[in-house]
Length: 435
Ligand code: IMP
Image 1 (cartoon, helix red, strand yellow):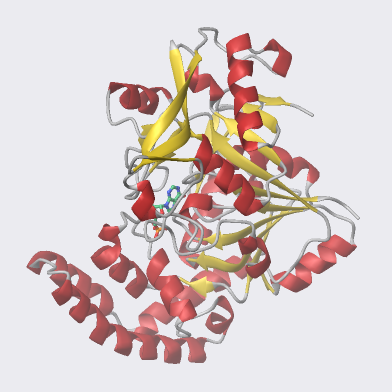
Image 2 (image 1 turned 90 degrees about the vertical axis):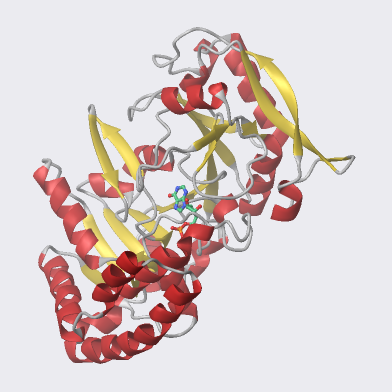
């Protein structure tokens, strides 16, 4: 039985999972996204050309592979059409795509509701929270519902009626200004038949492009029986998990390993989990960030690491690695190996720091905690000497500067898991592998 792989984020997203997934895809038959929606942003650089996706798994760059958007992925079918077309226009023949019939559709009212109340968390504004709310509230519209146009129109009419009551009340509650209110109202006054046509047409177009609507559990079981490897590609990360992250400053899905099972209805027979972390840390949106550098050093990291959101363009908050948080994320995911990305960004720093404990109310704590505690935590740091060498050309661990190796080795000792991949530059090939 082949060994399958899950790639999960260990921080607050944007760790560079896409690049690792892209390189692991060579050995996989199928690449699966199991949660999240177009709030994600993967950037993969292939032969100097940048490809950015929000919904498609990064595996789509490989024409001989199949990608699956699983059961708890939120689908905007018009965006899938656009992303596939963009790839074709840039000369890449995309791989085959399966979309789960159980996946929920992001509808216009979800985006409107996110724009009204998402500000508290600093969401990406893509309708993620409201779509999951409706899914768990048993009023979601699934991809499988949209195939029958009559049923789709009926479901949209029902949901429009509900949202036409809900949205004005939300706008009153959040004191939305007159101009924004007019714009938002226009969006929910659209005719149900027009919305249905847009979604049904996009799905039909996808089917014409060869996209198949499937049952995830069934196709993945078949892939496993055929002896092919499956690669699960997490979006967002452990500390943004709706249960295990910094609630309420989280996304509404399960980026942690449990999301793989719920999001596909399939339990891989053999699975290794690779967790991805940057050599430092970033966060977008609100929420605690104990090792944040709200100063010149943080700006330096942002500039050197080009830390701006792929989805929203927002500048990312930057700081040192928080090894307590990392160890927590490693445990929550049962991580077998770590991929540490962007080590090259730290080149040129005299001193590098990493969080190794917290002081809270006069006590020293060595475990990650809930938001109320993390908001009060003062970080205890360990200092490392930096290195000056350009490491982007390095491909073997032994060829890294000694100080860089010491930093990596400290991290793996601290979290108790080996660092198996190290990113030394943005390109697909700029990676150090380790047994
Ligand atoms: P939502 O997922 O749009 O609801 O946003 C909830 C929180 O997750 C916000 O803090 C976002 O900034 C954050 N978030 C969502 N997706 C990503 C991502 O792909 N990278 C980093 N942060 C994300």
